[in-house]
Image 1 (cartoon, rainbow, N blue to C red):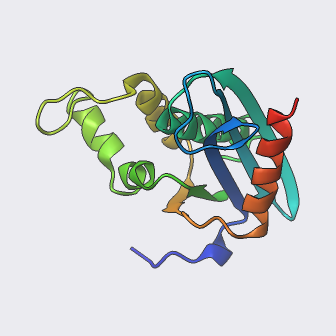
Image 2 (image 1 turned 90 degrees about the vertical axis):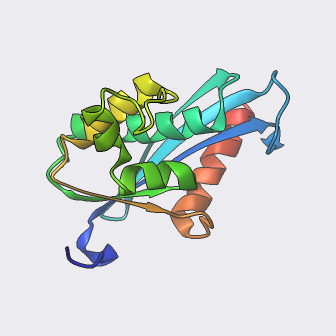
Length: 162
């Protein structure tokens, strides 16, 4: 397998799910508003969609951001493009990058130990979507200090002030 080269990917998908309550809060109370968003960067043009909902978990939000982003890419007919998905949640990035989704699917959506998969309906949706793309690279980007992530944060903050 060849080494990953960012320059080979002409579409970038930034997905994020963050709890907000006036500002970013790491461990919010149950009354917080949940926001997930994705941002697509193609040829220096941004496309984004976001959704607000009460009380979801961080992992679920991250999954919804990626799923909604991939669905939007499919809707736009961009599944044959080279796409780099930037993921802020390390465990989810590992799940995708290490092929756990495929393993779970082959194992009847259970872990190798026979345990139930958390958020199974979202994991199944994600796996089904990923199969529809020709060239999809996923990486974990915890620092999100580039311009696209700054734009993503701005969108999230603007949403919470509605």
